[in-house]
Length: 97
Image (cartoon, rainbow, N blue to C red; front, side, top):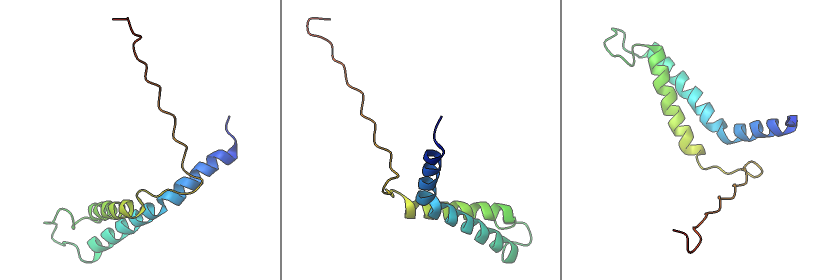
C-alpha cells in the first residue's frame, strides 16, 4: 500500500507541471466555439467553422500546442523522479564461443 501523501504529491507535481497546458487547451476550445457561434460559416459550406464542436476541437488543439511549447521541459524542484540506473551490460567470457 502507498501512503496517501505520496499519491497526492505526485498529483500536485503533475498539476504544477501541466497547468499552463491544460488552461490554454480549455481557453482555445472556448475561443474556437465562440468563434463558430458568432462569426462562423452560417451556410454550412465550411466544415470547420460551421460547427461549434469542430471549431472548439481545433481551438483546443491549437491551445494544447501553445501550452505544450510554453510548459515543455519544465523541471520542478522535488517533482522529478530520480533516474533509474541503466542495466549492466554483460559480456561473453573469454574462451567461450
